[in-house]
Length: 302
Image 1 (tube, one colour):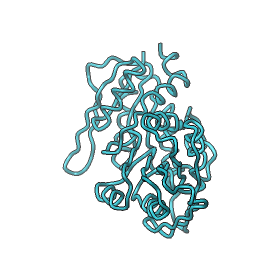
Image 2 (cartoon, helix red, strand yellow; image 1 turned 90 degrees about the vertical axis):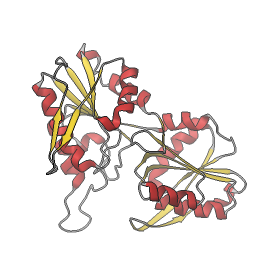
Image 3 (cartoon, helix red, strand yellow; image 1 turned 90 degrees about the horizontal axis):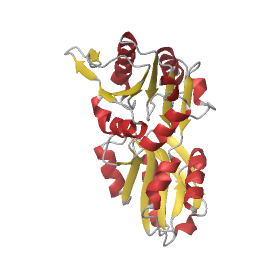
Image 4 (cartoon, one colour; image 1 turned 180 degrees about the horizontal axis):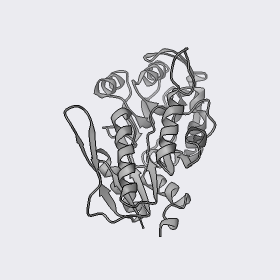
């Protein structure tokens, strides 16, 4: 038998995944002491399962990482033979080399930590640059990075203007923008991005004249401060776009950043529900469930 175990803040998404997989869902109790230490407890009445699927997105990752390690240990102590992590957003993936002397390569450290404590990992569009496959980040365990493109395309299709133009904010966005464009049957252009800092971005959009009097949809994998979207929106508005919207796999932006996006002329921002927030309107449960089935964790647990 298999079951999903989830922390409180991802209860809605975990419930949707449990419904897709038709497996039980159990809430993990978590208490934080005054000194900042966490106490993690799985429900005492839950019988041992062969495969425990631990669901938690790793945005704001520092405390969450400790808590998922404690949860994995508690599940094994309760008799789970296999503990797998479903982390739709996987933090600490940007730092894949030491950009300056003395820096820790956080991707390598956190990847090894997950590999040491879990038997498998499913995530969505991780922020990988110089690494070809997720398996290199979490060596020795079953790992899959699934694309959000099918879920995003399905959400966009519901109210899509066929004259819309997809905008990729940089060369790294090309694979998922191309996939969404193919699924929707619409045109795209890809920008060149020059970053001067976390909030300093310069965008060059070739063939921007194509956007005049057309709706523009900026597609990105990650919205953090929103600086890239602001820079894109300014150029698209200046070039005569009829409307500017943005769609992202993961939205980490806070309330101030979201307000800045609206002020910059972005009429609507939609994101997957990998991270909770007002933009999280695109459900991932179906694509996550397909990944879990494909890896055989349900069949082998019966």
